[in-house]
Amino acid sequence: MPGPAIVRTQRGAQHIALFLAHWAGGHTVSEEEIVRRIVKARQEAHASAVAEASRQATAAHKKATRLRRSAAENGGLVPADSVRLATAEFEARRHDAARDALGEFEVPVLDPGHVKHRRHRIAAWRCVILASPVAGILTASWMISGNVFLFSVLGGVGVCLARGDKPFALNVRAVPAELIAETPLVLPVASVTLVKPGEEPTAESAPVPADSGQWREELRLYVEHTVAHADLEGRAGVHVVDLLNGLQESGRYLGFTKASFPAKLRDAGLPVTGISIKGDNQLGVRYDQLTKALGHSPRLPAHLVPDLTQDEPSIAGEGHPFQSPSPAARQTA
Image (tube, one colour):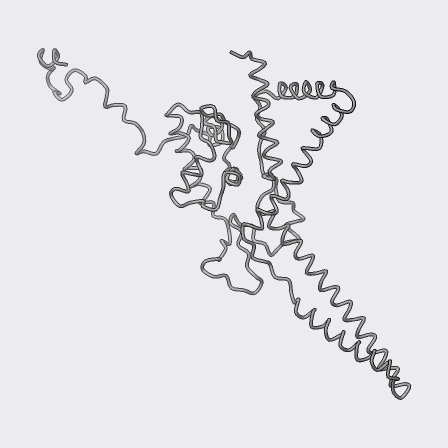
């Protein structure tokens, strides 16, 4: 059986690995922030295109005006200037039409693929950042000395030992206030529904004007019941993937995956951390941490509470309120 130091090091390594996977996978960035950054980039590109079309149209109008003034002062234009005037007028009309075609910026309707692609880009850059120190250590070990690798391994073991059984808080960072101010047309709702300015939302895409919080209560109640049932079976908690599977079997949260669902649980105020169940270490909700979050022990729904009175021995006189059971009955019992 491994000693306490080895067990502490293993648990520290598991917590650090979960934290690095959470960060490198881009799961610290919420879906709302990704949507806002995509909208902001497109809004800036639209503004740049409008400004460029306006600049070129203004330059063409100025050139045409200058040539007309010259024609009025000189009683006409030479053939070459006439060609330049016709060209300037054509360019001015073309750029005016391009500016009018661009119009006002409209919030694009983004499907989940846009968000997924942007998250993959974030994850790719973060994986490169994580791989850089490892590549540097291996290169230094090959070109300088093998002691570099040895000291790096010892340092990593020391960090794991120091971390011990203290899991990281795998949170989703808040959307920056300046980003919210720059993208006022994006609705900050749980399921982001983007509506174009001046367009009436349809019955299918009408966003909820305010978060009533009902989904939070329903999700917290579901997790409470599931974790309480797991404790009854002797498990320390429930994995996130099992919680999501149970919800999706009833037709809820179909748009979520095991990678995106932890953020939804945290939005509901539920603690999500690494948990090992039957040797499988994944993100999940622990019974003890959920107790702290709820302020009471997780409770089972009434229809699942086991009836502990069925197996109790009958007491003397039960069923016979005015007399004790006969000796024959006691002997049979």
